[in-house]
Image (tube, rainbow, N blue to C red; front, side, top):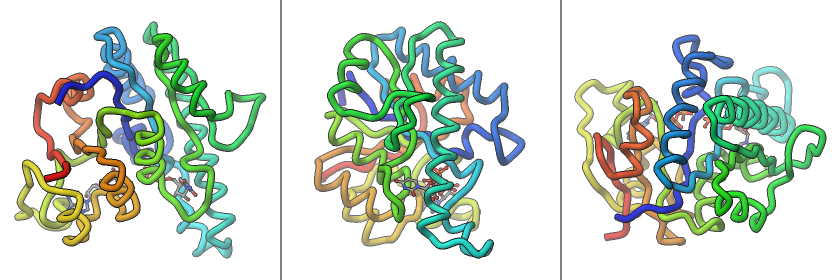
Amino acid sequence: MQVKRALLKLSGEALAGPNGSGLHGETLTAIAADIAAANRAGFEVAIVVGGGNFFRGVQGLSRGLTRNAGDSIGMLGTVMNALALEHAIEAAGVPARAMSAIAMPALCESYARRRAIDHLGNGKVVVLGGGTGNPWFTTDTGAALRAAELECDVLLKGTNVDGVYDSDPRANPHAIRFDRLTHAEAIARDLKVMDTAAFALARDSGLSILVFSLHTPGAICAALRGEGAFTLVAPQ
Ligand SMILES: Nc1ncnc2c1ncn2[C@@H]1O[C@H](COP(=O)(O)OP(=O)(O)O)[C@@H](O)[C@H]1O
Ligand SMILES: O=c1ccn([C@@H]2O[C@H](COP(=O)(O)OP(=O)(O)O)[C@@H](O)[C@H]2O)c(=O)[nH]1
């Protein structure tokens, strides 16, 4: 697979490092350095960032909030991460633009498809906060959506496991890793590494997903080149 433009999904947890929540400076710097290297190598990178390091909508339920209210707070968390990444990437010497699916013009640009494509063409890294801008969705689905509309060659899912397993590897130490599988197989087996809506959208838009671990330094550049350990979810 020849990749020119990629959508990189970073979970919020990926930015929390060893702290497990919030933002970890060294982790943020290391991820930003990898993204800056990918940009310098000529890849166009758009990032959708999660917010699980701050708040997930479902957590609101146990605090007396509705899912709609919780998801609004969750989306704000993703914008915080987008602003942190924008800053860290620029500190690594590469221009970056945070764009939010929910308008907050004093903080960053609002997401608009054509503007995002212009930024990518002008050598900027685009960092997309706010997910889809709607409650009841996840940033995985937001990543599949943006990858489709920005006509990305691949969706890279950077996470804390090195691929897709036949069951959750954190829960089952004997879980077996797939090298490759189809979207239909991932959905039929209910493999939780991404949610079903994200797999279905990727399937319908013919988008391949590469799942890889962010724990190895240089993992993002390697994934863009199709190197390192990963699982490819692709049409037959
Ligand atoms: N079949 C599976 N293969 C790989 N990872 C899985 C699977 N089922 C569940 N997971 C879990 O999915 C997580 C990766 O998804 P991610 O979106 O980064 O995290 P989270 O859903 O906690 O925000 C991993 O921590 C892993 O434990
Ligand atoms: O389109 C979206 C994307 C995210 N969220 C909210 O933002 C939270 C953080 O996103 P996510 O859980 O996908 O982050 P990650 O697990 O990738 O860190 C979610 O729990 C939702 O509450 C939402 O409402 N709509």
